[in-house]
Length: 76
View 1 (cartoon, rainbow, N blue to C red):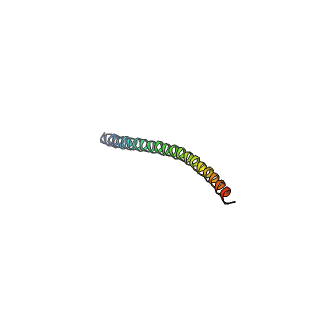
View 2 (view 1 turned 60 degrees about the horizontal axis):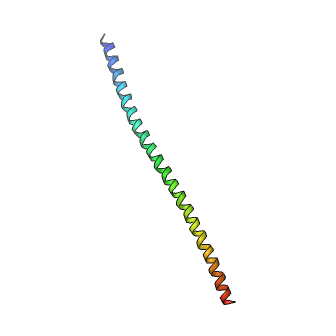
View 3 (view 1 turned 60 degrees about the vertical axis):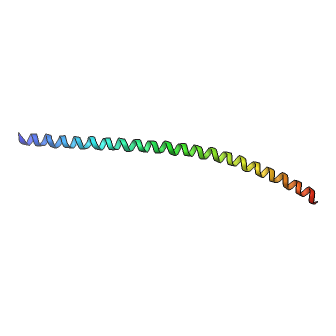
């Protein structure tokens, strides 16, 4: 009978360890999920800013070309 009680106690201890490990894994999975969302948000922001920068660069190039044309007209 004591072997059965000891076996049940061992099984109970194992179940407790599994439950603790499961809680830890749930916490880690939640943290990973939050990090993924943060990375996704940062990626979207970076892409938006890159698009705006490309537009600004295009405007600068266009203005430089216009100024070069004016300088050429003055010097020739």
